[in-house]
Image (cartoon, rainbow, N blue to C red; front, side, top):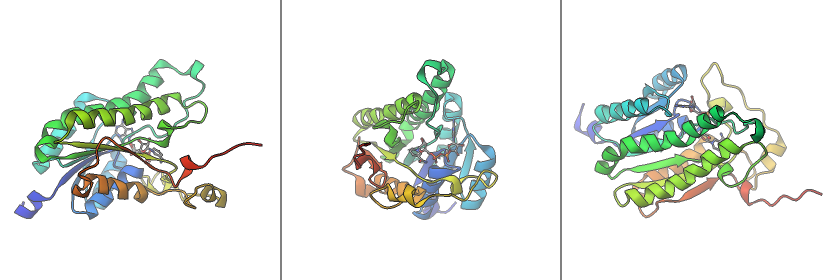
Length: 254
Ligand code: NAD
C-alpha cells in the first residue's frame, strides 16, 4: 500500500449495502474515503462491495461479538478510523397495535435501531479518539412525530437523538457526534438487484413536501459528508432534519 492510500481517511458505515447507507458509502468513496460497509444482508453486501469498491463485513449490529469483530476488521484493514455512520435499521416503522406488540419484537427493534448504535460507538471509541474522528447517527423524523402503531420504531429513533447528544458531551472534544433525521427518502431503487423496484411516486407524493419532491439517498449523504468533514468542526450533539420541509407543514383536517 502506498503512503497516500495509507493516509486516506477511513469510514465504517452500518447498513451500507442498500438504501441510504449505500448512498452515504458511495458519496464518501467519491470524497476519497476508504469505506467499509457492515450489513446483515450478505448478498447485498457482496454486490455493493464489488460494484462500488467498498470493503464488506457481514454483521448483525445488534450482536456485540459481530460489532467488535467488524470494528476490529476496519481498524486492521485501514490502520485508522475517521468516520462512523450508524445507519443499519429495521426501516419499516409499523409494529401493529401496542396492546399486541410482542416483547421480542419490541426488543428486536430497539436492539438493531438503538443498541446497535451504542455497540458500534463503544467498540470504535479508541480508534475514533486516536483519529479525532466523527460519528453520524441516522435517526428519523419519527423521533419527532408519529403515525399510529409505530411505538417501537419511534422509541428507537428518539433514543438515537438522545444517545447522540449524550455521546457528544461524553466524547468531546476528541470525537464529534451528530444525528440526521431523514423524512421520506425513496430507496426502492437503491436495493440489491433481486429486491430493487422502480419507484412509483405520484405528483401528490412530491407536492406535499414544501421542497416539492420526495427525498433521495444523496440528500442525506450530502449532509453526512459535511458533518463528517472538518468544516463542521464546531458542530456536535445536534440533530438535523432532512425532510423537504414536511415536519414544518401544519396540517388540519376539515
Ligand atoms: P433499507 O432497508 O433500504 O436499508 C437498510 C440496510 O440496513 C439494509 O441493507 C439492511 O440489510 C441493513 N440492516 C438491517 N438490519 C441490520 C442489522 N441488524 N445489522 C446490519 N445491517 C442491517 O433502509 P433505508 O430506508 O435505507 O434506511 C436506512 C436508515 O435510515 C434506517 O436506520 C432507517 O430507519 C432510516 N430512515 C429511513 C427513512 C426512509 O424514508 N428511507 C426515513 C427515516 C429514517
